[in-house]
Amino acid sequence: MDIFSGLIGNEEIKSSLGNAILESQFLHAYIIEGPEGTGKHTIARLASASILCKNKGHGKIPCGTCNSCMKILSDNCADVRFYDAFKIDEVRKIKENLYDSATECEYKIYILNDVQKMNVKAQNALLISLEEPPPHVLFFLLTTDSSYLLETIRSRAQILRTKPLDSDTIYNYVRKNCKITVGDDALKEIIVASGGSLGYVIDMLDEKKSQALSKDRERAKALVCAYLNDNSESISFITSLFFLQRDKLKDLLSMCAVAVRDLALVKKYRGATLCFFTSTEEALELATKHSVRKLLGLYEAIDEAIEDLNSNASVSNTLVSILTKKGK
Ligand SMILES: [Zn+2]
Image (cartoon, rainbow, N blue to C red):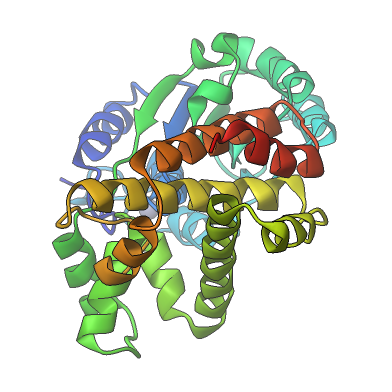
């Protein structure tokens, strides 16, 4: 049986979740945890289609051709719903409709994206739905970091962890399936910078998205330099970011953390595999100006700042706190 055909990598999830579905032994709540672009959405969508597929046991699951599969795989099924950027009002809506029967399928499936962004109040509201869900309801909670979820939520779901893909797998996949508008060397650089995220590579091959991502990377690089240089220009750059939304700042700081990690690594070992910088020379040039201690101090300060943001710290306080916490 070809389980979750179309999903590359993540063999463990394919076999554990795929077999549970084949044997109708699946649970009512799963947490799918992993870095951006490692297949969390794809797995939730394929699992939903597999559960509701009308042609189970015919060689391929999901079959991809029955009415149910076609609707789910194109995000047009009324009973498989995606929720983004979670708010307490939306959890309330789920609770209100939880006991209504499915419109066209055997199950109602809720796929909740970025659940680490839910505040405690919203998580508690969700918990009530997870505690005693009606038999026809299933949840997939997608997250980059399940440690931000209440233990009571984690204990009610099975956690499946997606893994970054290796470079060869990504290279072969995009060569076969994507329109490539860059040269082979540039493609390999993008793959190195992706840190194993197929989603990132696909976005970078899309002109519009790649422009936005390049802008984000440039901004992250500028912010890292501002913190390392710590002069009057730095202060004005840092204050110019006070307008950012909390989620945007969190994404930006996560990128900065990876960049600083690269700098500390390349300083210790020239041949280190880098995840942010695409050129070792560029990383080395920047790293040589600063001590490993200073780099690690900044890394820790950024890490703490991301946690502060999760506890609702303000954008301006968070940006300034890194300056004071990073040490000299
Ligand atoms: Zn099907």
